[in-house]
Length: 380
Image (cartoon, rainbow, N blue to C red; front, side, top):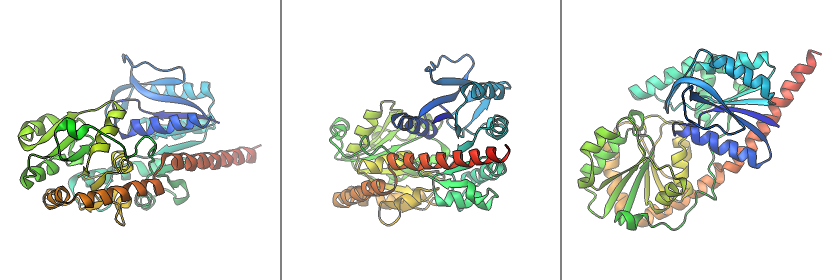
């Protein structure tokens, strides 16, 4: 089977990781994959032989602005490649709305993965804005043959907004549990920490990192406990200026080396995700797979991941106050973090392995292909 995958190679974000991990796994299982990705026309990005660049004016971790000719470039590429199926890891661009028409003209079945974060209860301005994104997309998602989401909460939301129930399929994010696994790490020695707490992700408003930093500062965690912030984003310069070494907060920046990120997680005692909105956080799943005790808000699908004792859930309201109580508790009770780490690892093994994710995706591809063939035969 030949799959045309439309997504992003950069800048680094969950969408990029999702596309890389899934397409590599599909290649390992013998599928032919053509990767169509957005790149500025003057970009120095190097495309591999199986890749096609779609011109764009701008792309960020959140959205993409294609050029006026991008739809024609995409249509011609699909016509030339003649894939069996098109899978779009939606990049929040105007092209998302045109893609069903392009594929219909070429008689190509079309699947979307819909990533935007959300909070089912709209408890804050950020979550309310994200809900508007779902309202905007729902009428167009109904034109895709299938829409993959990461949780049943997300599926229920799209169905309420008018996407036909049979077209919305839950296939959670998956983690390579051989790569992300408990193991030896020297990171604590390197950072001179007896207890290591880690945040890994974008430093942006929706991630609510400042609430974590405020809680850490007011909890007075002591010199032997360190908080490592892994990642970058628009709020990083401002927050760095206020919260730094004097509070035992270490800014490690964006870590491109995956093995280094694994080493950080393996050495961590606690992983913290204070987001106001989420989809299904890959960073959270990676930490859990490494056997790290996890604290996360119940935004998006993260609450489903941690339910029934696989971690500690917080509400998105007053995160700093909750963390100010929880952080010393996790500092002073290593036996609790050890137990939660084991439960976290087991939860990933039970529900969120990349291998199982790909098996479900293979079955979905077969179903959509059979549906397409039946439709075409009806017109003969």
